[in-house]
Amino acid sequence: MSMRLPNFLVIGAAKAGTTSLYYYLKQHPQIFMTTRKEPRFFALKDIQLDFRGPAQGINKTSVTNYNEYCNLFNEVTNEIAIGEASTIYLYDPRAPKLIKHYIPDVKLIAILRDPIERAYSSFSHLTRDGYETLTFLQALREEKARILDNWPHLWHYRESGFYYEQLKRYFEIFSKQQLKIYLYEDLKSNSIAVVQDIFIFLGVDDSFIPDLTKQNESGKPKSRLLIYLFKRNNFLKSLLKPFFFQAWRNYIRSKALKLNLEPMPHLPLEVRQELVEIYRKDILKVQDLIQRDLSKWIE
Image 1 (cartoon, helix red, strand yellow):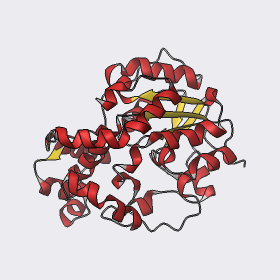
Image 2 (cartoon, one colour):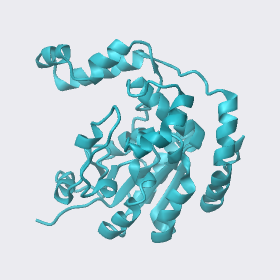
Image 3 (cartoon, helix red, strand yellow):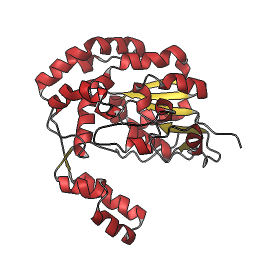
Image 4 (cartoon, one colour):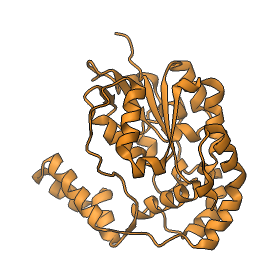
């Protein structure tokens, strides 16, 4: 039996609407998306995983073996577009060449978000899940040490936002026809237009309209106990599990976690200004590369 591989990838960026996009695409009858979001194969192939930090689940959920990766696509039937979404692919320097080696004709989709908002959203996401205990400024100060200690890419708040080198790696080895770059602002303000444009890009029926409910929203948890009960393995969870169907468990978990969120406080203006200066040159280079006005990002 020949091994099946994807013909498109959502490559990132993290915290730029990729989880929502994954669910929008998954609903289309002509599109197959792997059940496991973020297999991360093309970034972590053949690596003995030893990520540190509080969320080491990435060591278990990542796929590093070629056959195991191909198995993710075993359930493909007659879908036209076959894909997966791993946000590490944009950030990780190994990924473009490995993708080119295995699937040279692949179509690639990236969503870019203001790197400062993206960093703060990543911080908020990890705070929400109880994986970040520092303040944003403290976390930025600790970032280099954490990277040296091999913490996963979600903690690379500042580093993940330098998009120019990340995109350049793809532009150098793939044709422009294979790449679609969107902005988070577009997905947020006009989801249906972006999604239908992607449907055209993937060669599937673009009249299909998915449920466009936002997924994986960040925020500040009102109760740490609820985070522990729903997101960590614990005795109560094990005890109640046999009494509820999987669908009910997912529904209750989703509702409870959403109700437990309140908006994060706004990023202080002086912190934003400091980060604008750090990113300014990179943003201007990205603007030239993708031919989009990114002036709002450096306001």
